[in-house]
Length: 390
Image 1 (cartoon, one colour):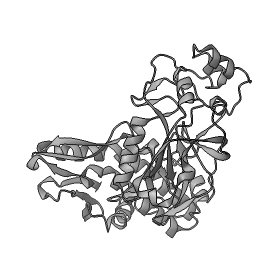
Image 2 (tube, rainbow, N blue to C red; image 1 turned 180 degrees about the vertical axis):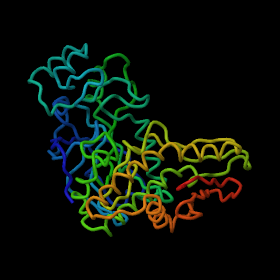
Image 3 (cartoon, rainbow, N blue to C red; image 1 turned 135 degrees about the vertical axis):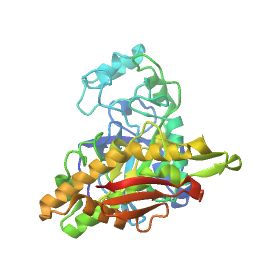
Image 4 (cartoon, rainbow, N blue to C red; image 1 turned 45 degrees about the vertical axis):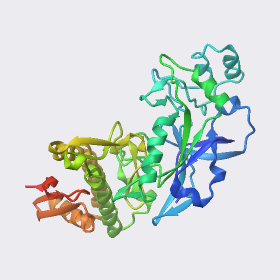
């Protein structure tokens, strides 16, 4: 499959990097680089190593349109996070070179940015402190290392059923470029190191927004793009979608570990990242979480474990059901089927969870509950949650 999107030309430069330990054996020295669009590529003193065609992906990312590797039976595309944004965060103006020049007090940098007219393809990383751990348009080392550590904790693309788009490398921006970009800011200057994440993604299709192509915009185009051309394939798409999203709703349970003799428990939770904008769909319907920087371990008292489990289910339950509804509506439209809504959902759930270690189903098609178990193997901390009710 070839990905669609707005073409974006990036130039690559040598960079210091840290590699995901799972991928060290693959010899990825040719990815020890950063990828920059105009006008930032003109601010680097080191030589250009190559010119590459990407397509836009999210606000500050890009992805190669052709697959580069197959892992766990799934094709993956090379993605770069932290290439700059084309959008001014505080206005409707583009974040082009001339508008960026207004934000710096460095006369030399102003002159360099204004040496050419602005272009619609301009993108900038700025020195504005954004989301605590990153500069606007770019990626900060703090956030990138969180994503890398989670990738290393997983088994390539899965963490006990929770599917991830793994970070391959964290690459540092050239020091001379970083200092110039740091001076471009509106109010609060970001002081941390600026990097890019080099990662693998199964597509550039998000669930609801932060992309030009989303499930939320309608599944008709996605069925065509992903080759969902029969009712059995559509059903398998639904099964994979629900299997992967239920795993996302139960990540805390899947990573639960006892601490301090069972008085406290730790597990992974989501902070400022969401199913609708920070996950992508693979062509078979599987959802992979791609923006890993907001997934961190939390610790709670034993008495609060079940509440945390329930909170995590509720956190993404609407987005999961919304996405399923778009898929099922297109399946019905395209293949002229009209099943009972709740009975069909229950049937697909059963297929999706038949080999899940942590989530079982109990009850009938019209009175079905999730029985959520946990990695600590403690029955007293199991949670039941309604899946289908009349």
